[in-house]
Amino acid sequence: MLDGKSALVTGAGSGIGRATALAFAREGAWVAAADLTLEAAQRTVAAIEAKGGQAVAIAVDVTDDAAVQAMVAAAVSAFGGLDCAFNNAGIAPHQVNAGGVLMADMPEAAWLRLLEVNLTGVWRCLRHEVAQMRQQGGGAIVNTASVAGLVGLPGAAGYVAGKHGVVGLTKAAAVDHAKENIRINAVCPGYIETPMTEESKRRRGDAITARTALGRFGVPEEIAEAVVWLCSDRASFVTGSNWTVDGGYSAL
Ligand SMILES: NC(=O)c1ccc[n+]([C@@H]2O[C@H](COP(=O)([O-])OP(=O)(O)OC[C@H]3O[C@@H](n4cnc5c(N)ncnc54)[C@H](O)[C@@H]3O)[C@@H](O)[C@H]2O)c1
Image 1: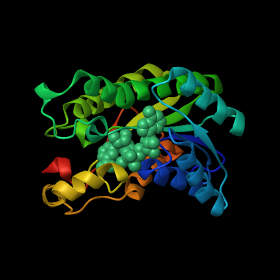
Image 2: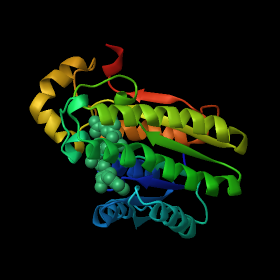
Image 3: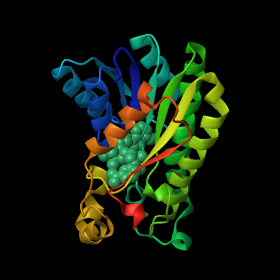
């Protein structure tokens, strides 16, 4: 589905990003795997290469604009262009010591950090990717939002606000750049088994699966399938949309 295309993935060292980098490669794309942890990105690259794919690892912190610009430049220099991008790097409330903290009790630093990584980080990636794609005459981008971008979740105000922001940013960016032949969509995963959700699975896994129509957590590969399709030419009339892949969580 992506033969001969080049694809960039942030947060490619773990979870959904790693699975999507592997799926991109399986579908014929060259993959630039970017992560805060270079070693994790390198492990993803090794897994792609072991299956005969081509990939490069890039260290990036999506809160650093110069690093994001350098990441896009590195992907372009490795593969001669940028056709697809998956802006997926993100953090959960527990990673800023705010897991389960009520909105009014949340420290400002935790709020700012969640928005900085999860929302402004996506915007930084988008602007540098669009700058490259408009020079080439087009491209396709997917941002990782969440069911937390569609509904409220308890004890996660900063995360919920950031993910609703990603949904809005995706629509606005899609409208702004449609005439430049750049499609921009979002995926909204439900609860997916990754390192990010290990703690919530332990603490309230039963409640989460009870609330999910399909009665289980998803796996990262199930998100990757939607991202591959959205980045492919099969989705040629799809832009500014949110693709919910949540086992029915938001339908209940
Ligand atoms: N797992 C879920 O249930 C779930 C549900 C909805 C949305 N999401 C979203 O999916 C995305 C991926 O989550 P995951 O579950 O795979 O998590 P994960 O923790 O397994 O992977 C996230 C990756 O992002 C990287 N990262 C974090 N901060 C970064 C930064 N500043 N710069 C660059 N890379 C950074 C981490 O190093 C890690 O490799 C996130 O945006 C998350 O909010 C996850």
